[in-house]
Image 1: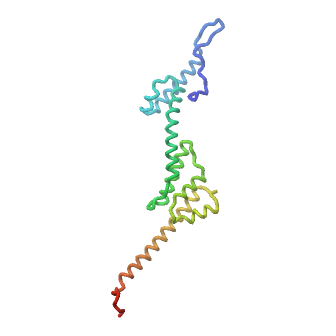
Image 2 (image 1 turned 90 degrees about the vertical axis):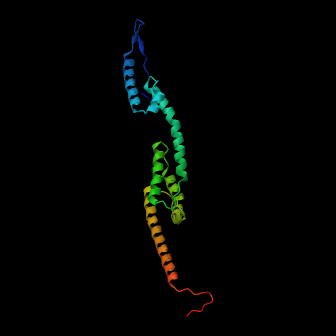
Image 3 (image 1 turned 180 degrees about the horizontal axis):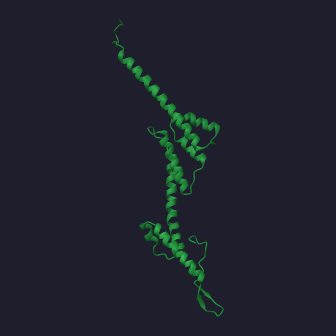
Length: 194
């Protein structure tokens, strides 16, 4: 009814004697229309209600709402696509947080009827990573991108653990080397070892 698929019947019908009589189909249609109109009004915020309160029929309200929110949807989809295409993992950001950010943007786009293809989600995820994940980028280039996002997430979380472990080992080695350098006696440039 609200989308115009059910046409408004004429308010009056002409009988055999060429007299106008109230059309019972119109009365039924009007009762249903006014019920839908009240349902629509009950669900709208005050700001939106002001924009449609003067309209008499549910299909008019629907058309106005559709027109109003289509332009808002377009702007929202453009902003979400921009954010999605520019997403990068920050140096101090956890992989889990980064992946959640990508998933949220992809879900938000799907919600407004702009779904992101799986292949694009994978590509954007990989492209947003730092150089320590270059090996994964190379592997994906060689083996293709025909696997679910969840599989990529699992691999990235495992790889993050490995990167963190290697960094901690590297840091530990540096601390040990620094400690050894501090504890050994220093010699002046011209001094002979004793």
